[in-house]
Length: 201
Image (cartoon, rainbow, N blue to C red; front, side, top):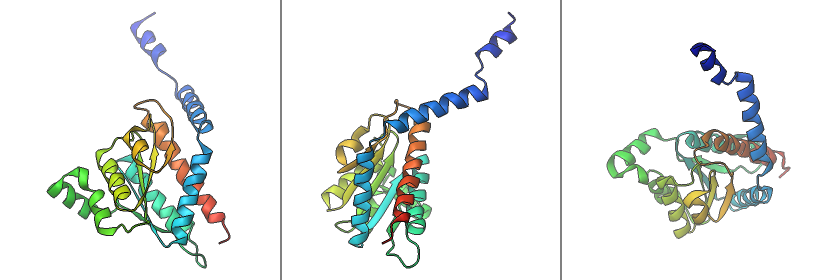
């Protein structure tokens, strides 16, 4: 066998990779703790009843999921004629985030916003694949200390966030398995938001 043929034999075909990825994602979804999902849904509904705010935040892909989650709750699950969810993404204000990161450190970009905005009873949702992002952990710790309700949506082994948060949805994945963890986090956004959008009141 030539060197070229040996190299080609090591390449995974796109279809085969896609099949393996889908199978892995399906396996992770099948192990999802649906009781934990239902618990977080109840937390969101109680926040709406109490006119509390839901704050979402994370880094990188999780920052995008945080903004997407806040968007879906604030629009899709809050149609006209129905009491809305007060949802806000702390990842959306780039000017303020870069101000905080530059002046007092990136580990403070979410905690400081909560310091300015959070009231007791507000729900604080940190999203992270590793569960160990220092700025997310710090924000959840602040929420717990100051009367907020800390919620963690995590992957891998759950990290520090699993220990800090009062309510946890843990997507169990291998360390470094960012793609599937973040995929399921996005599924959770749509699952929860679509359910809440179906409610009559």
